[in-house]
Image 1 (tube, rainbow, N blue to C red):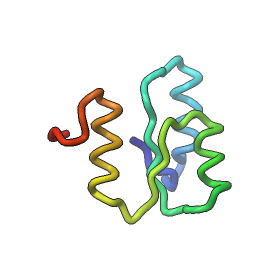
Image 2: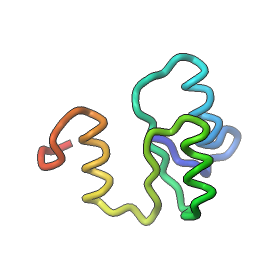
Image 3: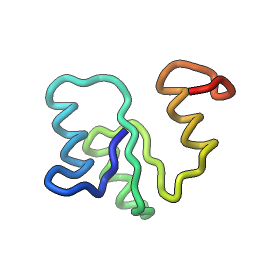
Amino acid sequence: ITDIQMPVLDGFGVAEALRAAGWVKPIIALTAFATEHDAEKCFAVGCSHYITKPIDVETFAGRVASCLGKPADQSV
């Protein structure tokens, strides 16, 4: 899980670096940016999922659960 807006190395850079290092597990991008262009950029750099803020708890929990291979109704 990475926030797109971080100082020094933003979430785009984190995702790119992880993928370049061979990371194959999901990367969830959290962002206050909510445009189609921002979502496209997240996916282009290797993010698996894109969630906008403010965070909807059910959506967030379900997405994390699916990344962990658990049904969404189980605790994360």
